[in-house]
Amino acid sequence: MNPLKIIKIGGNIIDDKSRLQSFLKDFSTISGAKILIHGGGKIASELGAKMGISPKMHEGRRITDAETLDLVTMVYAGLINKNLVAQLQMQHSNAIGFSGADANLITATKRPAKVVDYGLVGDVAISGVQTDTLSGLLKLSLIPVFSPITHDGKGQLYNTNADTIASVLAMAMSKSYEVELIYCFDKKGVLEDVNDDNSLIKEINTENYKSLKERGAIADGMLPKLETAFQALSHDVKAVRIVQAEEVANPLAGTFIQK
Ligand SMILES: Nc1ncnc2c1ncn2[C@@H]1O[C@H](COP(=O)(O)OP(=O)(O)O)[C@@H](O)[C@H]1O
Ligand SMILES: CC(=O)N[C@@H](CCC(=O)OP(=O)(O)O)C(=O)O
Image (cartoon, rainbow, N blue to C red; front, top):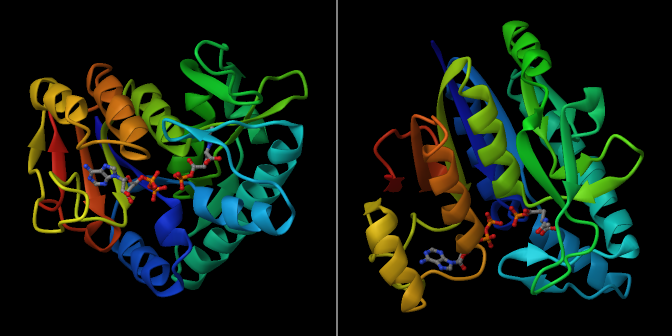
């Protein structure tokens, strides 16, 4: 099977012009088939505040009412997605931007209300990914760039956590490719102490994850990353890493997630 790198870039880097530029330069040097998924939560929260929409988060995911869905659709599928594509084109990378609705690439169902009703948030399943269409794009040497917006096939858009999209794409594409999933963000990897850059944890497995979570060392936006990383590994994804954006092209950097 051919290798495929599925790379996710988070909102803290997207919000930092020089760090984003350096990430996109390094991303462009990576050879072979690749897909980029972007977040943008920080920018959506900042722009929302200017419009009087205050962010409501629960365990790293955004509670999304109709007004917030309009905001995130504009910010993720418009502003950020198109700017990333333009900046990749500047690096001579032939990027093409998508939401999940485009070419029906990712369908979702409303996340069921449990402890919290997340509102217009979509859950995605492996079967919701149009893998043949994506493979066709990769065969044309195009670089798909996904915003975290999905749809239900009945006209409803959903906000979907970008880590979740990266993981589901990785699982779905593992049928035809040897997939490495790389989450890129602002820190060196998963840290023992979030305020200490020198406390990098080189390897996380289900055992040490449990104890790290219990003592609160892993919280907020790190929760969906690790949850979805483990899901990916249990569905044939070859390797998963969480790395600093600047290290995207370094195969030894960051935290390696193990089953
Ligand atoms: N143990 C940890 N190691 C690293 N970061 C952590 C940890 N626990 C919580 N975090 C927080 O998770 C954040 C990353 O999640 P998030 O803000 O969703 O990132 P992004 O949107 O850039 O992908 C970090 O910036 C950090 O504040
Ligand atoms: C449902 C949900 O949580 N959606 C996310 C999508 C963006 C995202 O995941 O952005 P980062 O990767 O920058 O955190 C949100 O609106 O914040």
